[in-house]
Length: 317
Image (cartoon, rainbow, N blue to C red):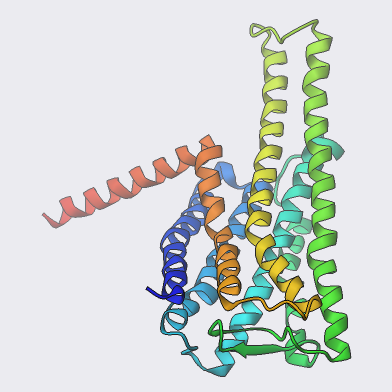
């Protein structure tokens, strides 16, 4: 079997796992009223971003890569590249928002933070989906370029373009969408984790040792701090998973932009791009493993669906 069909098979596998997985996250958070707080709304919005990445980008590449040529016309080829850039920036903004939400809850305003959905937070959610548009539409306006690459069978950035506008864009874009956001994300999460750990240690010192299980007030405080620290670790795992999936394609892109003497083979481009799409299936897996309340909600929803189906079958009989 040649290499492109193998990559196409992985794209198809990601769709099979990621589409229902992310849809399940969205539906579960919508139906469970206890999840109607900001951190879970952000996770549902992130799941929607991953869902769209698979639908608007990965799904179009499956058949094209398998047959080794683009099948959907020039306009859709350019849009495919636009969507992958748009949804990448959208994901980065979601991770930044989730990290800042945990920072507010644990570091900045632990006593007053409620996590409720306010008008200001709704506006911020709206901006997360709007801001990537001007940052992604540049190649359609002459700032950078989307071109078809017959070696990988889809459109991508014009890596060999040497115009002045593109040289500026290839420096500004990675700085604005990767370096700066992830420096902020790392600083926020380090602060969150240290604060949560320090709060637990302070409570134990205050009571002269491990918390007495019979003291309900102490137990509740420590339990909340442990949940906060676990939430911080969960966010860190989500961010780390995204970085592991994205860094290979980013490094490949940097080499293609700034090291013209290096000939990056098409197999490497296809492989690293495919690894990036793996990020779209990571989050439902992480939630299933790390969040017990999410597993309970999913089981509850499946039981409800089973009851409804059984009731309908009974009515038909």
